[in-house]
Length: 89
Image (cartoon, rainbow, N blue to C red):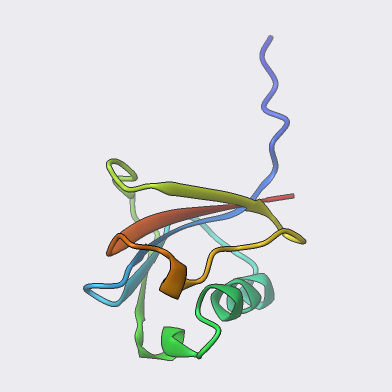
């Protein structure tokens, strides 16, 4: 038996070129907003649309892993126009 011990809080794909945030499954709204505030400290997330309940093609975009209390890279520090964020417990 294989156990997956990682508890994913949310997995996001952010496309800064198209200004779209993709969410594959249900997320806690408060945690989602807090995450967006960390990724977009200047509030740019307010100009984005959300695309949810879809199967997301995660490749070939880079992954950034963190925990709820960890550091999340800001949108200004990422050089690609599309990236994935995995928030874990």
